[in-house]
Length: 175
Image (cartoon, rainbow, N blue to C red; front, side, top):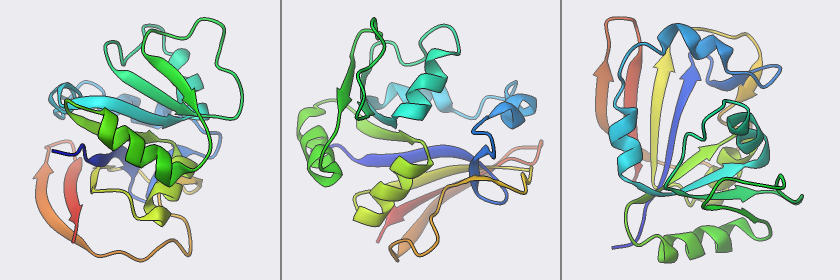
């Protein structure tokens, strides 16, 4: 079975992945709740991410994706000692996604982002599912998940879940 490319992210109600400065500190009030992220990550074989998201994750302390293959889209060399399993990639994104689908033998591919990587994959039509956690916060400005004028696509609602703190999870698959 071919690995699926799954866009899995927390977004503000105004559909931003990060605030205007690229930060995600606005997610801190929601960190004490279990949203099933550990179970999701257990089903992931490869993480596809952009350079800014990689650099941000490197600043969190312990590497959060230990044991996973992590492919960083970048035109620059990675830091001198990247964590085990981390590799840089550049070039044709559609070809890269197809290669990762073939090479990911166990689990799916997590499209971790950030915004430009998510928007590019959506525009190429290579995203198989969109799994969003809508956080009860509006940022007013930030890095939007969906680019204006992006590629139209039809999606089928598969699941919704809600938590008492106002978080709503929605899962869509491509029709």
